[in-house]
Length: 207
Image 1 (cartoon, rainbow, N blue to C red):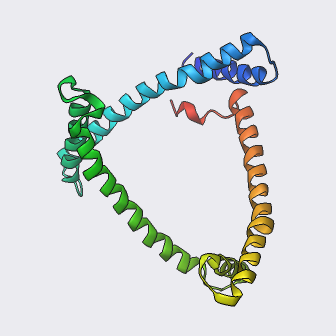
Image 2 (image 1 turned 180 degrees about the vertical axis):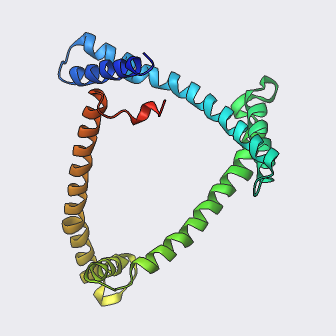
């Protein structure tokens, strides 16, 4: 029963979503809005609560075991606790309070900016390794990347570079993108059918 009941739920919900798409009826639209639009936010709230509990539990375990860089767990719990305290306590104004806004402006935003700045260096390093012309495909990738410098002022060659870069974007790049989207769409359909019919059961775990 522990496996049959989840499979039954998946089959009924999946078949209903498939059936509803081809039945333009008022009752069908109402059920779609109720199941697909009203329930996900409710489930998302409980999923977020579960994520917070899991974060606290894992962080405390790492701190007790003195795992590498366990000191950052103190910062994690302090930030989580302060945001929850100032955001949920009515006396501080809730989510629009000055304390929450201060933490967002002077802690969250600088941290995000730092992460994206570091990401730029990693991307540049990966691009340098990938663009080495060691084969025909790598050479084509290198030429395409060089063509993408159309936003740089190149004097009398700007018009030709812009035309060539537009051609690369609208012809080979768009063709490859469409092929990838078709493949992804077929993969989504096949995976959805396997899940609805109970062929794919990895989401149930090992028990």
